[in-house]
Amino acid sequence: MSSDSPSSPDRFCAPSSSKLAPFNPTDASAQALAFDSLRLSPGDVLYDLGCGDGRFLVYASDEMARRGGGGGGRCRCIGVEYDAVYARRAEEAAGGYDNVVIMHADVLDVDLADATAVFVYLVPEGLKLCEEKLLGVLRRGGRVASYMFSLPGLEPKETFSSKGGCKVRFYDQSCVAE
Image (cartoon, rainbow, N blue to C red):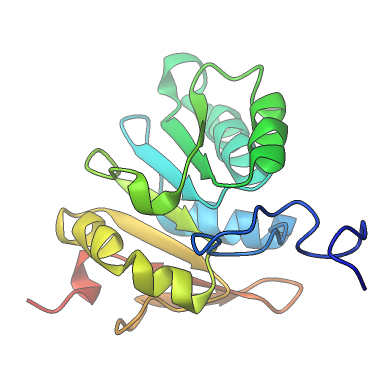
């Protein structure tokens, strides 16, 4: 199959050593598990690393509003997407949300200093490259939900299985050895 085939995972991915994950949409049950595990509150800053089409950020914003955090009670949501096509799709999806920002950027170049919660879907090699950034979030008391893959060298506090059988692993400060 050629790389420009519509069904090819590389169809929309720019060739680069920074390609940390193919587009793999997070199913609704995994989104719910990740959202619940992160226990977001209005003061949080949520990053979605490898946000694809932005579906988790929109879900998180909608859920916070639905559960009573509407208006100014939603957290700030920041999506980071390397692929220009998906970054545009995420921007379109988030167009009506004043609390959602999409960055067309390489995850490796993004400063997570203000992150209090992170949702991440990256392949194991990508997670290894982001290890220090994610450990920094956890050491500051932040929370991380990883879709499908474990964070390198850490045992999750909790592991959930989505209806499709994919894992969501939750990490917090207690997972980081002192």
